[in-house]
Amino acid sequence: MNVRRKPTMDDVAKAAGVSYATVERVLNGRGGVSREKEAGVLDAARKLKLDRALHEVSVRWLRIAILTQKPDSPYYAALRQGFELAQKSFETYRVLCSVTFFDDLEPRSLANVIARASQKADAMIVVAYEHPLVVDAVSAVAKKIPVVTVASDLPDSGRLAYVGIDNRVAGRIAGELMGRFVGRDGGQVMVIAGLRTYLGHEQREGAFRAVLRRRFPACEVVATVESREDERSTERLTREAFRKYPELSGIYNISVGDDGIARALKALRREQQTVLIGHELTPVSRALLIEGVMDAVLDQSPFVEAVRAVEAILGHYNRGAPSGLPLQTPISIYLQENLPAEF
Image 1: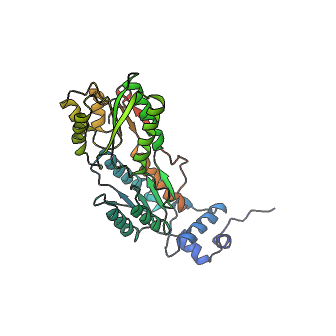
Image 2: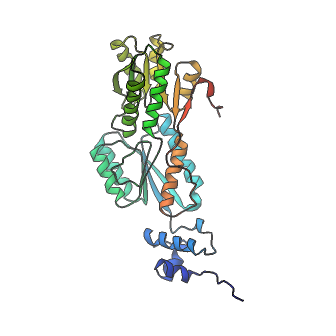
Image 3: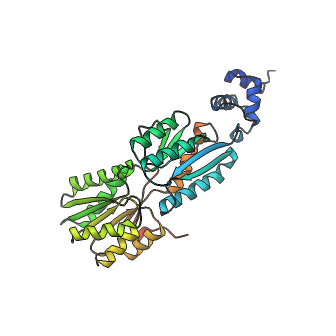
């Protein structure tokens, strides 16, 4: 009678092409093994179905450098909370999420922070805009460790993956909503971007304009201005726009500062005449939807983005079981009548 022999660490060593000592260090979490050999050992052990809790095996703590803007706006605050949740959720896999905030948004400053943060990291997650200095800095890091971009992609940087919404789809949705809300007679429309050098912002604006041009030609985009991701600037930008275009029919706010736009609209008594569409369901945008000042909000679930970004890094290092969730996160459209319960 043949009894199937259980696989051993010797079998794993032969399959992975490494020594017994290397397998022992990997499976007992003793460290001192390269990332490539670690991945090979774990892959071989799983294929051989070694009788171990391999999903819990890690050679050492995996250090993930996370680089974002300061959590001054609701989106970045929610993103930070998402990474805190990911840290707790994936602690079994020995993950350390270290968040670094950019000092400012100048490209050389971003590039310096990216280079510095990568020095003691095994992987990087970054939210950054497209600029030659920034792309070069990320490309240099991506040659050494896996990099995941979030919210706005850097497709020419050699990054491992992009996690976030399809920003062109978001822009098209905003364009259709604007065209329908403004109505058949159309009118003048303004776009407020954060930074157009963010690929995501550029894609949203381009798709928004394309839909209006193709399907709602009576809606004319008369201006695109930049808030530079400064929430305090949107009230001033809105007031300046109305001095040039007193009958402005719609505003598409791609980034932060819905409350500033709302203050300007109320002061000018235009809150019921001017359609306002924005991004991210926050306490502020929720209140503005209920009040009727905002007409629609497109939400991209930064919590989900943060968790999926960390999962992408874990997948690269063969740690944990893949969730099967797509890297492209869904877009939710919120109007006054379909707001979820507030927790």
